[in-house]
Length: 200
Image 1 (cartoon, one colour):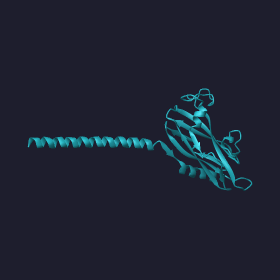
Image 2 (spheres, one colour; image 1 turned 180 degrees about the vertical axis):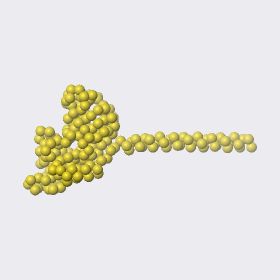
Image 3 (cartoon, one colour; image 1 turned 120 degrees about the vertical axis):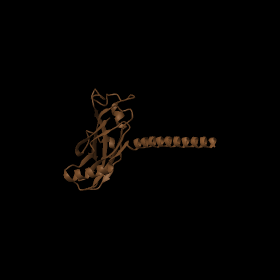
Image 4 (cartoon, helix red, strand yellow; image 1 turned 90 degrees about the vertical axis):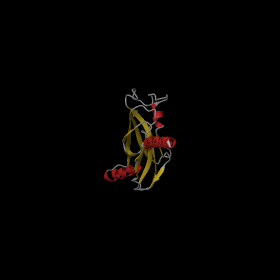
């Protein structure tokens, strides 16, 4: 009888211990999965709505949204640039955009020139920042009086220094290559659109 009671108590203790461990494991996994899913900020749909409003309410023909955003190291932002084709000739046209690193806060780049400043791990800060941005680099045809969207993804490396990073997004009409669309050659939208990323 005593052996049966001891066996029952041992079984109950083992079951309680297993339940506690299982609860802890579930909580831990939820934290990990929540952290992973929280790394990506997908603002594509909202970007399209905000850009449509911008084009309806202003004379702008090129805009990005958001123009300023805060991300953690390892964080990802998915956003959009919008181009409205209201060309004077009334024709469909090809457009490209380019995302160009242009500055960083003094704590990151004391010299003020991202081509001269050093990135974590070596190399220029400009080359380092260029790897953060991806977008459609081939020309996109936009029909007359329509809006075209180009998704921009910014991925902050896990070794990025805290501070402010500035990109300029430029748009060009009838260019075949994105790298020919620069701050000097931009010919659509009037001016470059600054994109500020604040790394926490």
